[in-house]
Length: 247
Image: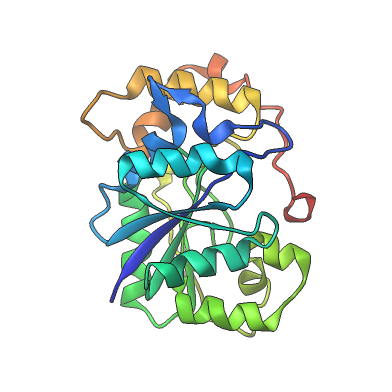
């Protein structure tokens, strides 16, 4: 079985264009995420799924420099883009990851993958049944075969743009599994993703304070630093998470 981490990444963003390539400690944020995800013990390959737009050429060039497979597809139909990336990599199992989450933790990713493999479920995620983790550490696991099935079941633009929402919004059709978060990591109102300029300022300062080259700090280390510095958490405390139908 081949297990692929598929990172959705594009330069376009309504609130912070170019966010996935903003610098973190001297390297693009996407490169930092790739460094961290590469430490997963379960993922056989990591693929970046970006768009065919000319504006996303810098993402393709970064991946080429790093030797990372990149798949380019539709900007709006992200479901087809992720499915195309999985099929190009001949993946049996997909771990869906977000390009705006450069601090994501390979240990949390591995916990989600291991839980999926150990059970008899269609979809496993560390944000089900409700998210208790800080924003920026999401991982969802499902088979390529399931995504192919979902692609044939819905043409709704919201479902197509958010890949898995048709799955977790239809628990009568699919077997769903949540992965419990350690109480130490609880912080659903904490933003350690990069969606706005304020988010970036928080993530940049937390990363640069905690990260050491050649090491891979855990999620609890980033969260612990933020808790010790509430003035940082206040920077983006007002930012509202976009609803899935807002694009």
